[in-house]
Image 1 (cartoon, chains in turn green, blue):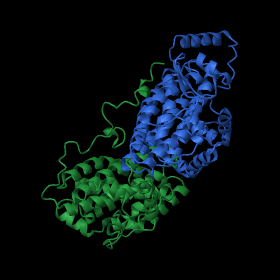
Image 2: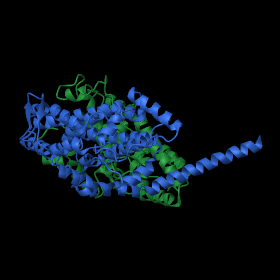
Image 3: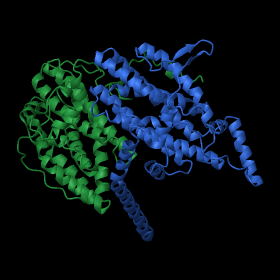
Image 4: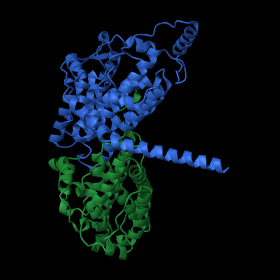
Length: 294
Length: 339
């Protein structure tokens, strides 16, 4: 038995360090070579608030996707949903870290993820709704991925080089998320009677939370004005057109997007009652051991 | 992860009745004797095929059920880095399950049928996954012990006589050694942390040590079919050899970590050049294998629920694929008429 040297060397340090684990297996550091100093032209306060909101969307979405683990309808979906969850978790980590840097508070990704209460989170409410059935989760993923992709495509030109780099990496990931969700929307919409009904119901159930994605809050307005971020109202038409195309292929009826979304929702710190339990679970171990290092 | 090495049940194939089969058998025997690979299209004795399907399926089931004990902690992982590592690991296990079901399919098995056998309790998975995960250190200890034991079991399988299985094992072993490192590194970090964290690590070590030793299967004297699997080069080492190897490798790692392995009989034996250690409670292994472990019912309930809740999704995918195929066929027919 000569070939288990891997095991024998377990207690020795590894040559390339453990840093590569930070973003899961096979991930490259997306900020390699990027200057992380906040540029003088960028308002740190606005950048922090803007990154926090986008980071919270990703964090809460990843948490919901993690809940699918061991519950997916097929093994291929186990792998795919975890993949999407991992991508979003990676985005959340980069964006929360950037928010901490920009606000200059010394709060890192974990302080922001584990030691804020629900009213301090700025994710859109669509991300926090409980998973529902596979059709509901796919409907939500389709809308969130299409919306986020449209935002990230524009954010690659952000005046903040870190946000631009995060967006550039995210575009590739989100393109896959959108395609995955679109393919399932079509399969379920044009599959059996039952799957059609479930998919249609999924869309109807998420729809009350979709308008909020295009509402311009005070942070977005300032971020867009300063070239840091994007006014979400600017992607409304593009997102609506993509969703309509998918719905048509899926033989589903898509309600109209509200023309002038009512301000309010997650970006304003107004959440559904689903966020509290989600955070309670996510934060339980970290808060039970606040002095610990992991 | 690895199924228990409880040996094969099938009796060896009766010698070929006609000369053709005799010749095929001789060719097979020569291939095995020369340590060459058997490939899916090669002739193989029926009992060899059955033994492999059973072993590979159990291994695949173990990967899938093995997602559960650790998967429980993804939503609660106490840092985002640990969450990412754990999420990726559990995803890898789903991937391993996929490769292994594919390897079983090269032998004529069908994934849906194997899944049915699992959820009906007709095929087993490794008994280790019937133990609960009680605190976050369990995630690290599972990486260290359970992935470690799996590596001991599986590294020799990379030289298994059946090609697709051996090749799947090469990839799986690489990923599992990575998981084991990550688990050990988590424990190292926790041991450098608070007193409560150190207690969590020792508690997890106490609970997982003996079940991990049982992962190698019953003692050689109670595993009569091991000999056949070894003769066929499906398996390369006996249960007791692998168990000894695991103990010898783990003891110095425990010392470095600063935990105590819960076995008062554990000591170095200069004469043997190995560690002596106590006897696992084999009646416990029998109980857990026969369905009476702490989490057997829970694991099967979850797997069955996922399968049943997903039935409408799989039906929809099949219906959609059939519609697409029919559409393509119709289009081809029309084009044929037009031409």
